[in-house]
Image 1 (cartoon, rainbow, N blue to C red):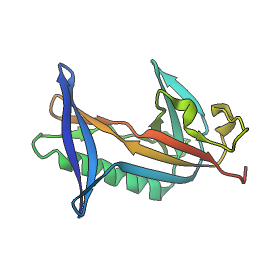
Image 2: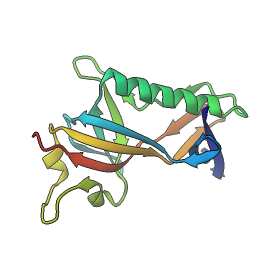
Image 3: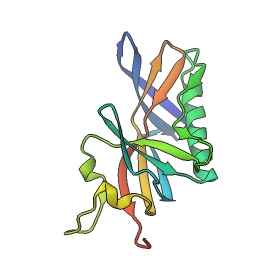
Length: 160
């Protein structure tokens, strides 16, 4: 059976920060999700000083992310978790999307051939495979979990 292990990293007046990982057959593994053949209709967006990309996802991708969120919520048994800040974005007249965070060294996330220069504007509305990782979860007021799906790699598909 697969479950989630968490270790407290820090605590402050806003909440507690935990490192999270999967436990599978007594082995600890990072939590990774690979989205196949997805695209972003908005491209790179900035909120405050953080950069994000919202990817259009299938029902299957949505189910996997919802399972991850349920596992995160259920794993913190020592806390009375009431809700989780879902990263699934549902808006009328738009496809279902997932909000993903670009790391600080985001220039290294786009996979490319030697000599190619690919920018974030080049991936807007193009099919990509995206590898995501959950590194930490934050619990606020011992009742609400928030987390980020951080982009590890973006591979632009050749059929664009």
